[in-house]
Amino acid sequence: MAARDTYLPYGKQWIDEEDIQAVVDVLKGDFITQGPAIERFEAKVAEYAGVRYAVAFSNGTAALHGACYAAGIQTGDEVITTPITFLASSNCALYMGATPVFADIDGETYNIDPDQVSRLITSRTKAIIPVDFTGQPADIERIMNIAQEAGLVVIQDAAHSLGASFNGRRIGSIADMTMFSFHPVKHVTSGEGGIIVTDNEAYYRKLQLFRSHGMTRDEKLMQRNDGPWYYEMVTLGYNYRMTDLQAALGASQMDKLDRFVQRRKEIAAAYTEAFGGYEGIITPRQHPLADSSWHLYVLRWDEAFINGGRNHAFDELRSRNIGVHVHYIPVYKQPYYQELGYGNELCEQAERYYKQAMTLPVFPAMTDNDVHDVIAAVLETRSKLLK
Ligand SMILES: *Cc1c(COP(=O)(O)O)cnc(C)c1O
Image (tube, rainbow, N blue to C red; front, side, top):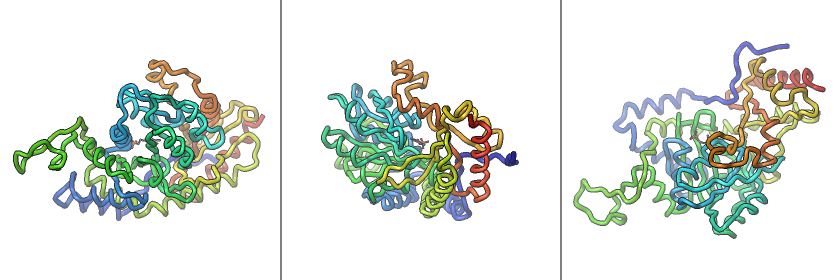
């Protein structure tokens, strides 16, 4: 058994000298927050996504909160999302006093199942928050159709899918609002950071207000104007601003996005080729219209063939210094959600998925040797645990 001597994490940022220089330049300038780097970063992301507007936030969670505000989500509303996601996708509905409703996943793509979404729409439903889990876009065309028929807003949680597309259309250009995250494990990083992209000017204005205390100096929005110092608070907002340091790093990283995504695709293809056809391990199925940007690679371990299933395989791989992970625990199982009254095994497909799933390392700075280490360790583990 050939264990690595260093731990290989499941994800990691890649910062180069250009990125460092971009941040240093801001530090030497006049503005370290609320300066010109923010607008440059927003323009870059909007252009990449193919939309008119982008509003940067301090993190992706704050951005989702802003999108829920802009969508007009209120106490008593229902918001449909997936249970196989990070907590923020449904917490943002709770922030507005709304009720998250969990639609089960498709057992093959692990993304929210549009049929389950349709089934759960009520007169109280206000929005759908699909998540492009692992970087594979959810079936956003069907979800947009369902939403349009029912008069719902779609906020796409694309924290995993910057650089992905669906049916030839880039993610960011399809939903009413789309959120990207710039946390260090995501495709490009700003340290912490998030953004909402949209083509809708009304949403854009609301997002800007919400990000900065609900304050404005725009005469069209103010009731009066006492002078050049004057501002008005017209809604309850937060301090959710990104700094110029973060924006400069994010903008510099955006220049490398296509290269990063290309490398992620190569690594995912190497895994799928290496693991295809082995009984007991299941590689991720792709929707025919989805072009994933591979934030994560999930392998499932079938306990019918593998002694101890995913849990034993997880221990084996960690003991070989492979930083495998599990994304995600179904959100409704969290103690906080259990106290709100959600069933502990609410969604059948999500439960099955959660028992079997394991995330393998994928990040652009991985070397071919790292990839081979993962493949060798997975196949050794399978042989050792095969019934
Ligand atoms: C990372 C992530 C978020 C939140 O992003 P932060 O920038 O960490 O706040 C939201 N949803 C999903 C699916 C994520 O992976």
